[in-house]
Amino acid sequence: MERHTDVSRHGLSSTRVYKTWIEIKRRCYNIKSTSYLDYGGRGISFEEYKDNFLAFLEEVGNPPSELHSINRINNELGYIKGNMEWALISKQVRNRRKLKNNTSGVTGVALRKVKNNEYFIAQWYDLNGKSNKKYFSIRKYGKSKAFKQACEFRAKKIIELNEKGAGYAEQHGK
Image 1 (cartoon, rainbow, N blue to C red):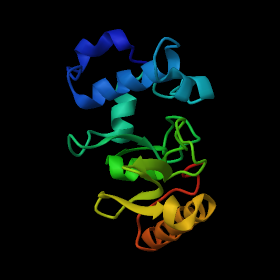
Image 2: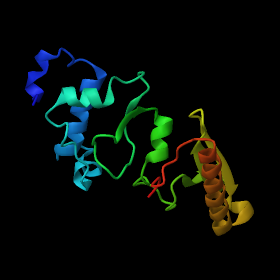
Image 3: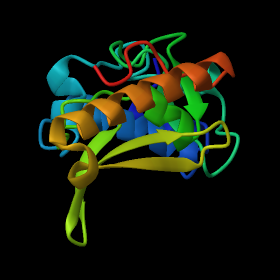
């Protein structure tokens, strides 16, 4: 097994893939890490590769671009064989859990105040990775109807996008 201290053997300690390997270990095992509660604290582990950088490199390869970062295909599983890939942020948001600061209770739906009006906003990423929003006025529809419209609109948009291959995961937002 290769240890973290044996990096001089492979000469890759300054690469993005090596830095990613270190970051995964930090978020999974360092309780002082600000990311620990979202990873190690909820059972996400990196056991297969924790002490073996070269096996990790063989599994995921180098990132295709500077815009790619490591993604767990199934967000509920750890960093395990077959569950990791390099992905753009636009794909990763299609696989994320509901954010902690979500006040609407629905992923991709937010309450916002703009000037003198409040809106529920449906948000999604299109196939090209572009962020989109549609506003539903509380003044015009009332709070419960605006919320319902935003939720329904976003749900339909996700179905449409998945039919075109967007890849919103089944566990998205749960």
